[in-house]
Length: 381
Image 1 (tube, rainbow, N blue to C red):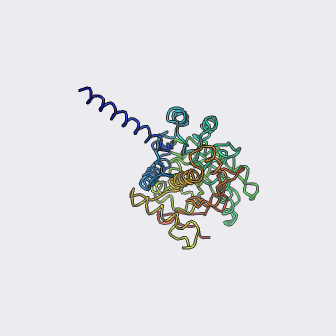
Image 2 (cartoon, one colour):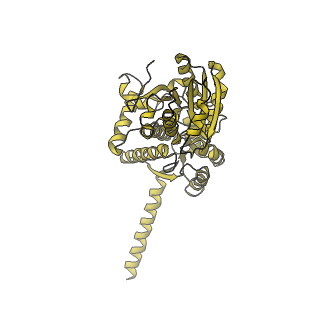
Image 3 (spheres, helix red, strand yellow):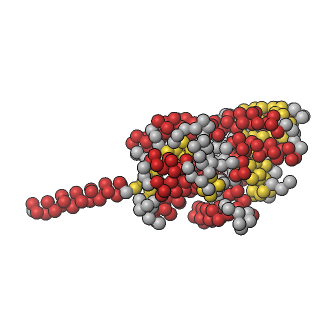
């Protein structure tokens, strides 16, 4: 009996040792995403993308023989929840790095928490303020909102538009875009005649549209938000018979917004990466293979169209993996590897990070797209 008990104790001890060893051989990656709530058109495809990539990577043996343990937390787009999850992931889960959050407002609230915890944060949000001013451990994959505004104004110049109305959601993303637009518009000879902010939870913007319509000099409208109000504004404008061009931000890159707006989405113009038009890129385009492969894998697995937001997660995950492959699991070395990464071909563009640029993308990462027959197509002028 004593011999049996001793054998059992030894076996349990060995199992415990194996479990500890297994844990030690994993790399914990946290992710804070708006899987539910108003920004779920962003966070849900981001979460699905990360789960797919982590599974594929582990099936291939992981990173340098170490499996990835992905820990996803659903913030529902709440900055307060994002802050709580950040502390939990850093202090309790002791993650190696964090991917996300989905929105700019959340990222701005956790930026200093990650910095204080010396934890690598690769945000999936667009506001340039996330990486300007620079924080040592904070990076992001979406294209900067400043470049998006510049692309919109260049298109307006080509279309002969010079007097506009600007509307935006009362979120961090909306505020950042509104500031960029006001700062850059004079450089392109664009005059902002009307400037309105709406509640991101709004379900009817017809009163706002009526006010804007009363100014007969407005030649086009720019909307800056990522909430479902993007579709509501389009519907309310067309229901009122207002047919001026509607420009959206790069937060419009999910076909779900088009479906929500219905026919009112026809003709909407917006800047986006090339993922949404990967099929028409020439075969020798440097992003073609990456874009088509990700699109085919995602759509085959989840039976839904790919979006730019899932692409942002794809880029963040692969940037982190490449840095770990190069530098090992020393966090400072991995941070340095990201900061010095050049020529990384992602869905958002070709990334060239530096000590002064923690986004790594320039204005050429954007194409101008429009909606035609319910689909995204390249804007032809």
